[in-house]
Length: 427
Image (cartoon, rainbow, N blue to C red; front, side, top):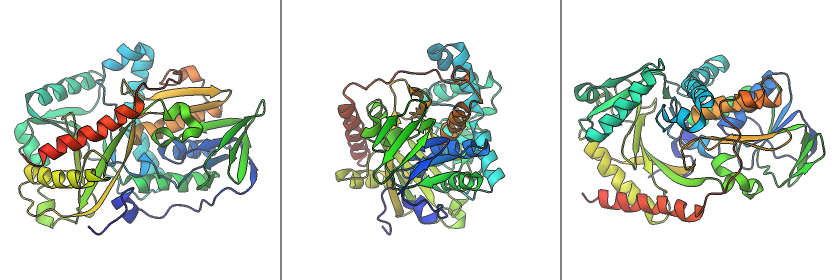
């Protein structure tokens, strides 16, 4: 194993550098303070600046440090829940509005990449949701039916078509979603930050927020060595929220997810796995995902944390599982390994919160951060620049509510994945 970076792994090794973002050591005035420099925060900064306002972004670590710089890089449309469930849960108005917006989210992502010349290995060849057995096939068939009724460009591949598209005979079929694609996620979020700065935004990393001060019509946001005062605040910290944002931190269960990346595969092997360039994942309860990067590295991931005993268990299982899926791979060696946390809600739906006058957050993407983070960041920008009213957004305002037994549930996910992979590595 050449790499020791278990936070961002391959993505940090191959992304272009981020913009200059020194720690905040001054008292600033702004039109909007944005806390968090992931997909949501950077998209919000770009769209606030494009509207002619001055945003200041405060980031506790570095741009893309959280889930935005660690995920698989699948730019999906929609959410984990079935399309028909959203109107049932949120009501017809919000449910259909959310489906439409998230169905179009990949258009926004790839449009911004093209508009701002973001170099992030963008590839829009679709994604494959691979069915494991009859139950998985029934699931994706129903999902495709519900999307097709809404005009989405999706279709079901039969077992033979799936073998040709995936390069594995492990699946009963696959849902091809042509709206979707893949990117290098850390390069993308850094590219959004570069574009936002070019439009007039200011970024300060290593500037964690330690408190808020309500000044009546304005807010003063404090960091260890400075402050920013503005009439509006966007909180975009999501799964990596600190105790300064305890409402967010306590309202989600943390699900760990890891990725391994091989050395670049020889051309012949590379052409036998996902030859159409799609990213893929399966229908298992403890799912797996896989894709190739532009250099031909095979990236494979699943639920679990690469720490303590888990690192060895998940590594051993991943080698065996990859060989099962792709017997054409002989000895499998990994060059990079990394993991991060996904913020989960009980209904797998994102959240819009309002903390006070002109203080808002959107998050809880449940493993679907790229499209939702980008489009909801734009929503928050439009909200604080008075382009839209809060009732016109795709999500209703949800009260902050702590998850019961949060720590125990997060530990259960981590331990459960270890047990499942420990057993699976020996089958």
